Amino acid sequence: MNPFAVLGVDDTADDATVRAAYVVAIRRHPPDRDADGFRRLREAYEAIQDTERRLALRLFGPPPLARLEALLDAFPDERHHVGPEPWLRVLRGDRR
Image 1 (cartoon, rainbow, N blue to C red):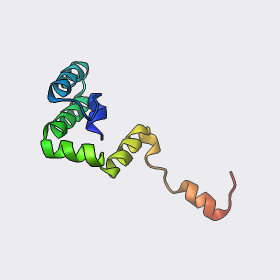
Image 2: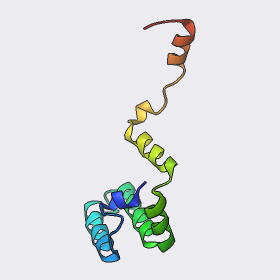
Image 3: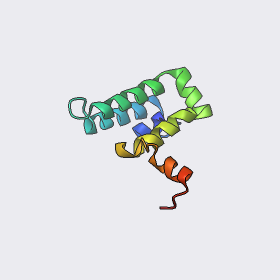
Image 4: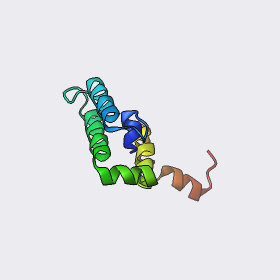
C-alpha cells in the first residue's frame, strides 16, 4: 500500500496538505459505513505522520509485497483459489 496514493497526495506534500486530504477522504469513507476503507485511510495517515516511515517511503517506496497484496485484492474472491482441476487436465493431456 502506498500511503501517498491512498490519500491522493504527492510524496512531497506538507503536513497541512496531508491532513486536509485525510479529512476529505474520511468524509468519503466514514468508519460506520466503510470500515475497511477507513482502516486503510487511518493506516496511510499514520504511516505518513511518522517521520521515519515517511522518509523511508519517499526514498524506497512501498514494500514490494504490498504491491502484490493490492494486486490480489483486485481479483474477485472466486478467482483467488483456482483448485487442482486445471493442473489435473494438464497432467492428463486434455486440451480443453
